[in-house]
Length: 79
Image (cartoon, rainbow, N blue to C red; front, top):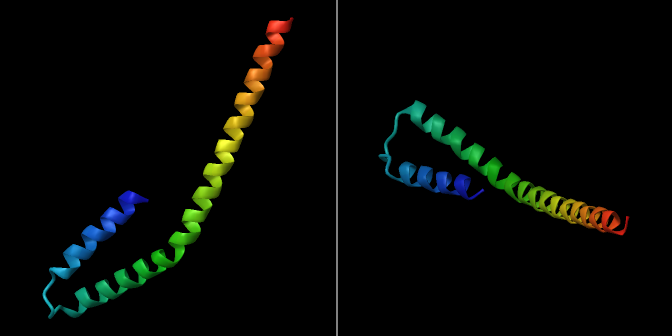
């Protein structure tokens, strides 16, 4: 996520340095880029939430596996 944000900031800096008068094809490309960035901005909160849920799930699974490994280790010691 941080790499994506860094790239977007770099792109914004580059776009700010463009001359105010631009060729129509450059303007069209910039408009398409703007639309894509706005769509990405709208999607980022749901992507972030999904990643947080997945991290919580993986942490829970890790805890479960560690508990099972501990149980298996104790079971071997009692045999």
